[in-house]
Each structure stands twice: as structure tokens, then as C-alpha cells.
Length: 279
Image (cartoon, rainbow, N blue to C red; front, side, top):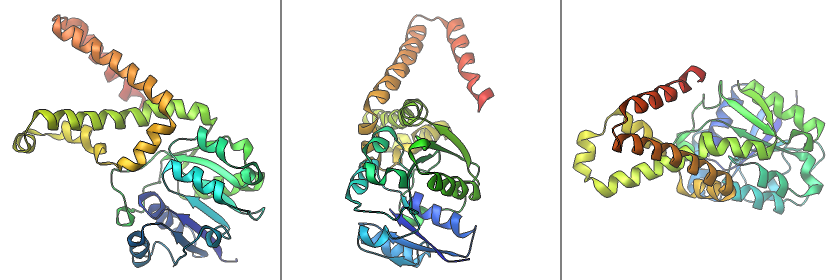
């Protein structure tokens, strides 16, 4: 079997973890990395996440497969900078929003692209955050798959299956609305929770009283602001709808507490409990 070249643009948590996972599936893969952060490049090399670092987009688009594991605005920018691709080259973006990315890819290379969203991640970032099981048993949503070439579709499905992911197919517009409620809005709430507590409480009180519940709910407020600013911008309309839905529920809770409607509050909480019958 011939050695396959895998390009990874963006050598952080997602790209690094992907490299580890793919290395575990075959010894016939050669990894080439590209990242504007030279410290990330050095770390990725020393950690064995990549075999080689290149400095330009032209050098990495000659790979058999290229993963874009960079912020969503960057994915669009890179797709527009690519001059040409071999018909067999497969480019897979892992952005958390999909509609704007899917629609922005130039027509001449659209069949080379597979737009995907692995529903996984942590609040950590950088090459040192990479872990071997980040993708295992998680869902990957493949969006607007009919716009990808048949060959590229099969390459993406095989790769994600090999690293233990469950494949879900969805339109990009549909994906973005679902992601706003299930992923993006919770991040907005976590940032809001962290800011509201810090503006009311001193650090000593936070350290003394913060329990598991607060730590769990505020954990994702440690996520990269640059990455999430881009996601919020690209999914603005859906995110606003999701935040408004949350505000409606929070106002209902406040109303019941203010008016001492304890029975109604209890019922409202019981309805929320049923979420974990699904999860």
C-alpha cells in the first residue's frame, strides 16, 4: 500500500487529536502540518503529531487528504485562496458552522470538499491538548454531502468510521439551527454565567463556594474567544433565536419564584429532568 499524505491546517486540539486517531488506524500515513502559530508548529513536531511542517497553502494542497481544523472564518478564507486541486484530493473542514462555509467554497473545487462537524471538543486548545480518544464514539455531521464528489464522499465516510465516529447526514442550514440550540447557545450561557458571577463575587468567595455544578456549567467559558466569536458571527440569526428561547424559560422560572408558584416550578423542573431520558 502506498503512503498517503494527510495535510492538517490548524495544529490545535482538533487537528492534533485527529492525527493521533488516524495514526492508530494505519502506519501508511504521512502527516504534513501548516499553522500560522510557529510555536504550535514546533510543538506538533516534537509531539509527533506531524512528520513535516510546511509554510504555504500550495505545499499542503498537494496532499491526498487535507483537513481544515481552523476557526470558521479561516476555513472560508482558505477555501478562496486554493488555486487548484487534483480531482482525487479530498478537503474536509471541521468547522462548527456549516451553511456559510458550504456556500462560500468556490465552484471549481466544491466537489473536492466535504463539510463536516464532529460533535466533540474540550475547552482546551493547542497541540498539547490533543488526545487519542477525542473522536471515538462521537457523532460527525456530514453536511450538503450531495455537493461533494462521490470519491470524496467515500474517503470522508471511511476515515471518520475508522476513528470510531457515528455518521449523521444533514443539510447545512438545518445543521446550523440545531447546533445553535445544542452547542452554540450553551457556550453563550457559560460565558454569561462566568461574567455575571465575577462581577458580583470576589475571587476568594468563588474559590471557597464553587462546587461541581458551577464548575461544570462554567467550564466551557474557558474555550477560545477567537474561535467562538467567529462561530457566533457565522450563526448569528440562529444563535439569537436560541438565546431568546432560553430567555423565555429563564423568565418563566423567575416569574414562578417571584410569585411563589412552587408547584408549577416543581413541574417545570420535572419537565427538564426528562432531557436525560434522551441523552
